[in-house]
Length: 50
Image (cartoon, rainbow, N blue to C red; front, top):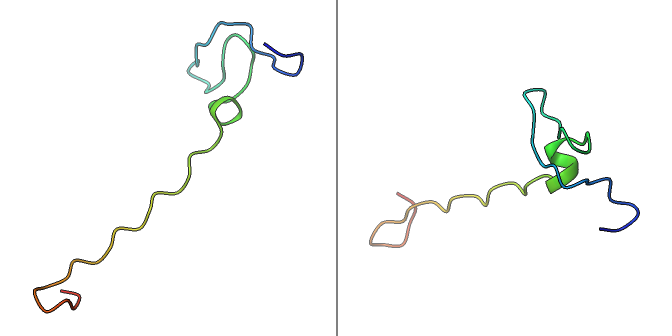
């Protein structure tokens, strides 16, 4: 563990959304997840969007 990391090794996210060990939110601990990739349009046999 480094000096800037408040983690104390008790990683339990409480009902309030914050870690009971260090007091950080899940976003602060794990970062925000990237937006999902767009789903490509389905194409027909002619290669055009269905």
